[in-house]
Image: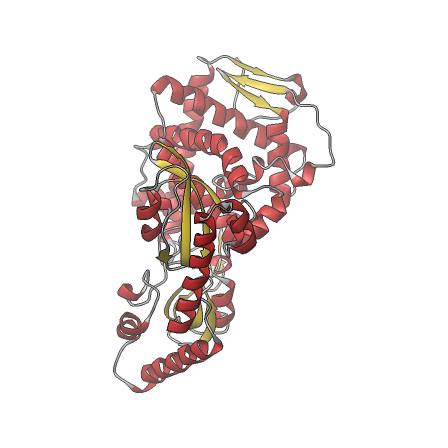
Length: 449
C-alpha cells in the first residue's frame, strides 16, 4: 500500500475533494478521529481516500485502512511543523498545481464536459473544492522536502541496497518508450475564417444592443466547458490563458465587452466579470473556424509527401519536423515528444496518448509510421507521422541497465529512514490524540507517548 500511496499522492486529492459520487447513497456521520497539534483528521477525510483508492482498483482491507490513517497522521504532523517553521506555498503555486492536475484528469477522461458530467459539478466548483486540499498537500510536501533536502546516496550505497533486495522483491520495470512526431494540421480556409468572424460579430452586435452575454454564450458558444455556465471561466491568472486572450481580457473594465479576439481556438468575445489582484474572472463566447474535408485531404497529401521524403531523401526526421510540423512544442527539438508528467522524453506505455499508442504498439525502434489521423485538444484535425526512438520490454530491474531507477529507490529508502527518526522526535513534542476506533491498528510509528 505504501508504494501505491507514493505513486498517487499527487493525484488522490482530486478524488477526495469531490465528496464523492461513489458515496452519494451513503450517509456517514462525520467525526474527528485524530488531532495532531492544531490540525484535525475527520472520518470523512479517511473514507474519501478509501473510496479514491478503490476507484483506482486498489484493494483496501483493514490493514490498508490503518496505513492510510497513519499517512494522514504524518501529513498533519508535517502541516503542524510547517506552521512552526513558517514553511508556506504561494497562491500562484497552488493555482498552477490545480491547473496541472485538472489538465491531467481532463486528458484522462476526455474533456472538461465529461469531467463535469462524471462528478456532477462545474469546473469552477471542482477547482474551488480542490484549493484547500492542494494547499495543505503542497505545504506538507514542501515540509517533507525540507526534512530530506540533504539526504544523498553514493554509488557504493546504491550497489549495497540492490544486493539486499530479495530476488522476488526486485521491481519490474514496465515498458517505456520515446518517440518523435511530425504533426501536420489541416489549414483553415479564408472562407471558413470569414464565416466564423461574421458569426461572432453578429453575436457581439446583439450584446452591444442589450442582449444578455451569458444567455448568448449558452446558446451559441462552441466552448463546451464554459458554455453551459454562460461562458464563465472562473478566476485565472495571465499565464493560464493564451496570450492573445490574456492581453485583451486583463485590459477590460468590469462588465465591459471586448472586440473580437482571434486565438488558436477560434474567435472570441470576452466580458470581464470581476478582478481580484492578479486574477480575473471572465466569460467568453467562442466560435471555431470550421475545417472542411478538403483541407483535411490536403493535410493528408502533405503528410504523405513528407513521409515519402523520409524514405527517399537525405533529410532527417528532425529536419523535416522543423520544416513542416505544426507542433510548436516539438518541432525545434527534432520532433521529440516530452512527457508532461515527468518533464522527460520517456513515457510509460500507459502514459502514451491512445491515438499514438495504436501506431507505435507494433513498431520497432527506428521505424517510422505511415501518416495517421490526429486531433489535438484544441479540436484541430490533421495527420501525424511518428518515429519510435526507443522501446523497452518489461523486465526485472538490473543494476547495469536501470541504475537511475535503483538509485532512486535507494534514495527513497534512505529518506524514509530519516523521516522515521523525524517522526519519532516530533511526536514527543506535539499534542496528538487518536480515536479509540484505531486502537487495534498496528502503526509503524509510536504516535502517542
